[in-house]
Every structure is written in structure tokens, then in C-alpha cells.
Length: 630
Image (tube, rainbow, N blue to C red; front, side, top):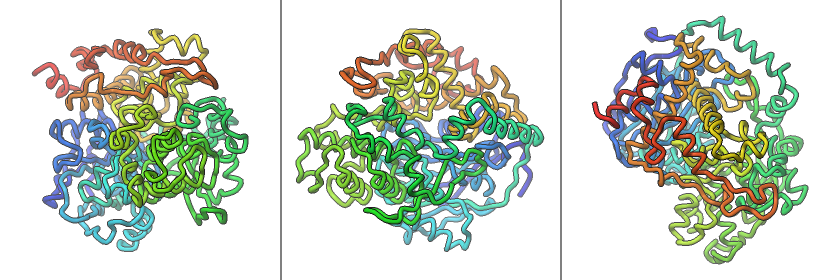
């Protein structure tokens, strides 16, 4: 394989047409890599340029991309994530979602920095990229198989247990709007329904293998920065608290504390911790489940923190020989969020979602919505298929989740579309939705960290806790007189700083937990060391804002208006709760957004960046011309 023209990159991407069974291998231009780097930023740039405006998500011209990042395979610790980009079946706007594991490295080893797919195959297919060679393989025999069954079958066919595979389960095949792209059995690019885009193309999997090497500009600097991380994780100010918590117990280590503080929801965001027993609060925590089930650690490629684990559940209602430990979001969704706390059910529902390829956040939020509807008399026992879906009924939680994953009942099939689509189908239950932009909200409460309201509502991919702003790590610990001062100009600056940090994290391929696993400021230093492009200071800030603006520009081109950015009143305290940790709290979400847009130099009414803001970022010439003319 020929040598790349760029440090930190293979320097090539491929656009594959499934209908024509053809592909176009292209070289990246230096300015594109320098300005957009990787992940969602680079994906937004390519889709903006290559995918015609107003293309429906399931049309032949719709594209889905699998994009690596400069940290993949070049040495930086905690740099193992790749990104899936497409239009969202939920919003019909921009969507990106990332995942850990080993697939990001596999894409690069196969000879490309990114793979984009368009067209619709007449029959099920999987793409196999082997050291730069593109192969189309029949996937008819894989259609209908679960995640693990599919991975095993492909590895057996290729006689290679180390091949990288990103795939869909039955959820994607059925075009569920909650369908994830799965890899490494239990890792998911889960949000926004990208698995449905693969399913609409009859694309079962993208399989990558190869031996490509990537040259780094300053290898010694990468090694030095990794040593800083090692020292930080061992001796830093949060080494014995937060770092140790995530390393030992993963995100699920937050469970009990988050329920008690009000960060996690209880009974679909309308209940309080007092409605749960002590056992229900403690039992689904990773600390308690690890004691009972932990078999071994699971560590994503290049990770120094190692937040994952594999469980073995030997007995009980749902024995499992091997399953991934539920993440915090998943545990709350199938635990406290439903007024319950049975660790066996939490693990079983997590396992079902992984096997069938469903996003656990959206699936849990949708079942929770149905549970509240039923508990308040909006659904009959006949409509639920005989499932007594009352608050806290753990058997019912397991049965309804299985019905959704397998599509085995009429209600299960409807709920697989997501909570808002289900409410529209049944023409009821709208008052119990807890979504942002139609996507079920994750388990960090804006009433505790108000900046999340702007992020959930107005990020180009709504309903995400992994996007930037004054999130739960920035905003929650501030004193009330600061964090609930919605018109404070400093709040907008904190919001912008959080956006920059998150965009750099995601485009660089770094894990979100790198925010606690490495000292501040290292990510741009890594990017500079790997690529040789200078991202110091103001250049790094522009890099983050350019990424955010590029993703937003995709939505503007599709016709998004400010009123299209919605958020459920319940999760921002409209009306305010009368008891519990969020008693009397109501978030002025629109003032938060107004301040952010003004600080970004965008028109608050239209969310359109000013011409000077676009020109100041650099690299946005096409967007500027589209908005303001050549």
C-alpha cells in the first residue's frame, strides 16, 4: 500500500454505491483534513458536499458514513472511537453517533480513513474491505440473525476472529428508528437510528481488515503525552475518586448517587427517589452488580481507563453466559426510570437490545412512556398484549422489551418506532413524552444541570448527553445563583467552551471519559503531535466551532427552523415538580439558547451564522456561498 501524503492519516476515503456495485476511491485534500480532522466533523463536511439537499434518509441517494479519527491507530491513549454519520430517520436532519471497541482501528487498517455508502442493494449484502480491496458479499443468510450470530458467521466465513465488523441486528433490518450500528458485540453507535439507514440499503455489515500503517509527525511527543495521562490517572487530583470509580465500575458506578441527587430520572422524570426502596436504588449500581456478575474487564482499543466489563449471570430468571455490563444510561432506563431496580431485568433488557441492535436509551425511554400511559389508564391490558405494564413491574419490563426487540406483538412493533411515533400512532400519551427533537432524552436531568437544556434541544443531533455545552460535568456543581441565572453572559461562554471541548473530543476519536482520564488541554496537543497541523490556542477553538457549525449547516440547508428544535416540558420543569430534588425548578431554555446564539454571532431567530462568523472560522466557503451567495 502506497505511503500517505499526510501525517496521522491514510489520506483516502471511498464512496461505495451498493446499487451499481461500484466504488470511487478519493484522496483527501490537505485543507479538508486540517479543518475537519475526523469523526462527525469530517463526516458532516463530506455529506454536505456529496449528498444532495433534501434527500430522504431512506432514499437511494442517502449516504451513511463510517469515519475514523487521527487518534485511531496512532498511539494516543483513549483514542479508539469511530463515528457513524447519516440523516436521522427520527428528525430527517443530521445524525452522528460514535462507538468504542476496535472498529475505528480496523477501518484505518483496511486502507481508508472513512467509508461512505449510498444506493440500495437488491438483496442483502455486506461490504468486505480487505487491505484496500472492496468486495461485495451475499448477506442473505445473515438476514434476521442477531448481533452475535452475525459476527460469528462472518468471522467463520472469513476464517478470521480479529476482523473488524460494524453491523445491524433485526432492528436495523426492520428499519426501527431506534436501530443502532453495533460492533464488538456490545458496543453501539446507538442514537438517532443510523442502523435503520443501513437496513434501508439492505446493508447488513461493513467488515474491515488490513495491515495499513499510519505515520505520525511527532511520535516522541505522543509518548510524552501518554506519560502525562498515566501520571494523571495515578497521581492527579481526581485519581482516587472519579478516575478510580470509572476504571473499577464504569459509568454504572454513577447509578445510586445519580438517582439520589436527581440526575437520573424516576418514573419517567416525574417521580422522586423517595418512591424507590433502598434496595432498588443500590442493586442496579455497577458496584453491587460487579460483586455478583463480573467475569472480566473489557477494554476498548488504546484505553488506559478500561471502564468496560463482561458479566456472567449463572442463575435467576435470565441466566447469561456472557454479556456486556450495562452502562449508566441503560441501567437507569430499565431501573429507576421505570420505578424499578431489578439487576437481572436490567441486564436482560440490555442484552436483548445489544443482540437485536436497539439503542438502549431510546428503547428504555419508549417502554417507560408506554408504562406511564398504561399506569394512567391510556392503554388497556388487551392493547399491551396482556402485559400488566404498571410502574415497577419488572416481569412486565422484561416482556415488553422483548416484544419490542423481537417485534412479537402489535404493541411491540409500534413501540419499535420510538415513543413520539408511537404517540402519533395511538393518538394519545403526548403529555408523557420525554424527548428532545423526537429522540428520547438521556439520563442526565437539565433541572440539575440547566445547560443540558440547550444541548438537548439545539445541538444538531438533539437529545445527546455526549455533545458539548454546560453539561452535567460543567454546570451541575455550580451554586444555584450561578447555574439558574439563565441570562448570565458567562453562561453562554461556558456553553461555547463546552461545545469546543466536546467537538474536539469527538472529531479526534477520543472517549468522552477522556474528560476525566487525561489532563485538560491534551487532546489538541495529541492532534498536533499526530498530524503536524497546529491546533494550539485560538486555532483549537476555531476547530471545535467549525465542527459544530458544519453539522448545524447541514440542518440549515435541509430547512430546519428554530421552532423545529423541541424539548419536552417535563424534563425542564414545565410544570415544576412539587417535591424531590427538583422541587420548584423550571428552566428558561429559550433564554439559554438566545444567549448562546448571540455569543456565537448567529441570528437567534433563524439560527443562521453571520457571514463574518463563517469567514472567521475558515474552511466554510461552500456554506457561506450557499447562505449568502457567491
